[in-house]
Amino acid sequence: MIEDLRFPIGSFTMPAPELTAEQRLDGIQRLAGAPAKLRAAVRGLSREQLDTPYRPGGWTVCQVVHHVADSHMNAFIRTKLSLTEDNPTIKPYRQAAWAELPDGRATGIESSLTMIEGLHERWVILLRSLAPADYARTFIHPESGRQTIDRILALYSWHGAHHTGHITALQSRNGWESLA
Image (cartoon, rainbow, N blue to C red; front, side, top):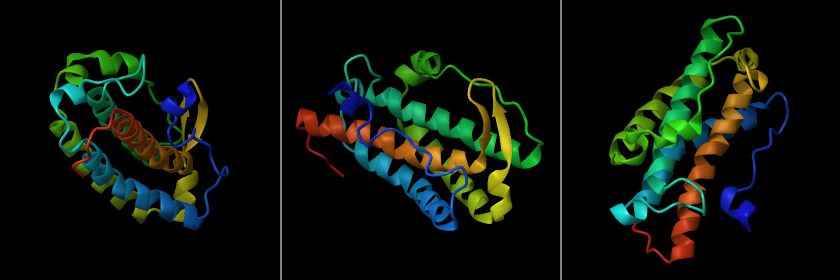
């Protein structure tokens, strides 16, 4: 049961080391639609509901929204580093520690929702402009090794839906009426 709470849409799996043109288009479309889906998932939630963890021991809805902004911002920067540098080594960040900072626990979610909308607009424009060979460009993650832009696209098109799923599953379990 806890795995269902942790992974409401299933865990991430990379479909293949290199995505097909169709898989790239699908991933870009999912990235483009992710901000609206996240905004719809939190529409009308009270402060008390935003402060509810999506699972026992998990982040609150508020922290999840701020995490999506933080995480996708880092992924966008990694994409740009991969395109402008030769196989750069990136600096990882401690996601759980970021979620505990005051801006992740107590700040209203509107700033992060707006950030995600603008970030995804730029990211989608960038991804749509790439040649097929650009998706093979890489960076080095000190903990998980060489990563491609194809992997970033697959992972983060899943990631937005994954966290939106946390919120919508919580609403369903708690009988919260959706205002979306």
